[in-house]
Length: 297
Image (cartoon, rainbow, N blue to C red; front, side):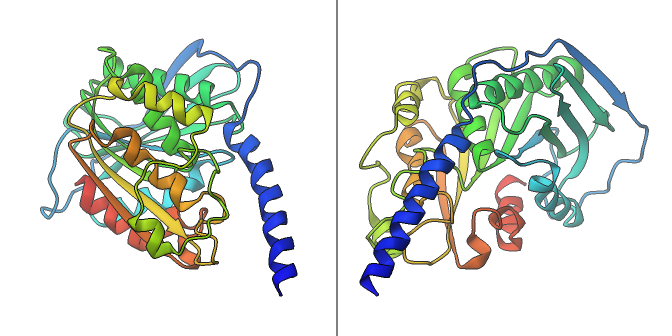
């Protein structure tokens, strides 16, 4: 049994090393935005429930590596069915450098949701941060968005945080209000085969035992992060004895709390365990959707 466990750990470790390269998505060159198009369709605004606060703050939804519309559809649909928000725009960033805004928009819209989709969902994180920045610039200049929330799954969570770290004081951008990060590999895939129990991990400091180069860069940039931002950090553990969600360790997902602990207005962690807490199930989890809605609206 002990030998089997050792072999299993080795295979998982090899798998994680391979996934580390995938999550980073290193590439030599990525397309720049060369054209912005808009295709809006007149429609009736969704009637929102009086249960929720109604503002003009837009909420951006961003998928992770190898993701797409299906990565955030569930969360957005859940929010709309609850009467908390309404899907307004889908922004496609194409490989040819075109950024296309499609959907419905009106200045009077309350709690509008904007879904961002990268056609090249294997692009480098550097490219994705640049694309996200350009989307936000357009939302402010063309659509009058002055404040925004952001929801990111997996690498999308990293993109959102790193965009804010890099461009936190850019006046071309709307002001960041709230962030929901779901299964974010902030310190890469370190600590994947953790020996401590889940309870012990939760009680440990959010500071990682080892910094990846990417994480160290985030720590150096922490002072660029906008002030007065509230964050909900969703963390999964499949409860398989290794303290991870199948891809991202609990320690890595928690590490953003160390980076931004003195920058944020508020910081909350929510843990989920079991099969519904797997990396590619967290963003389809009704409990996560409910927590997101309560936090944002």
